[in-house]
Length: 248
Image (cartoon, rainbow, N blue to C red; front, side, top):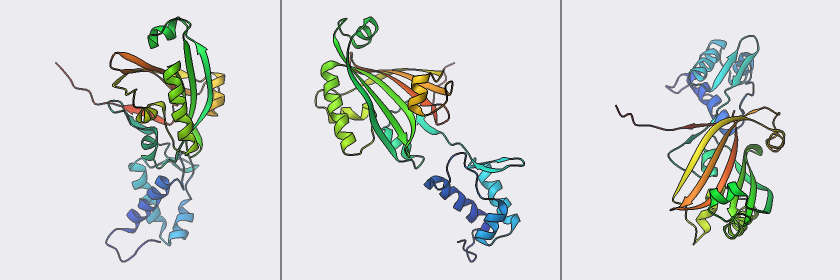
């Protein structure tokens, strides 16, 4: 309940209640919040106080008003800085989401011309293809399609299985923490917007043609490529940012 003997105004306290409910996941993205009448009755405050609280929450981009319909939780996106590589778990924790990872598929294939060039292998060398699904609060948000040389792939698959058995969320980058031999030094990435094809739409539980952010990555240890990865992020969940210097 709200504290009436505090110096903090009631509308500000109510705004904080709404904010905490969003952070905790009690109120989820795109979910309609209770009406002004319901909030007023629940917290024993006037309609004016409720309107002030909602107005403050709207200014802080916590909620969005839809005229004639109601007020909804803003579809907050996961904010990921480009010049820092963060773990999958810590990235989702910023929104209070519980991260999880599962293996969708693991196959041994032979390297074609493109993979041999990307991974510095011979054509027809064995390659391990590892496909992972990353989720937040059990809702799919990113699909990883990764290729390793066979020797490295076997090691990474073993670490992935251990992480899954221990119910620990991860992306492939998190797996290198367990390796004594392979330690990434840098990554080359490209970013592009794409529309979900049927196979990826099925995995991410979205409609065909849903907007995605496709990130292709080549992870290196010095000059040696370790893995090639295609990541597909739901366009309504992620935003990437970077600070760039200006030279005139």
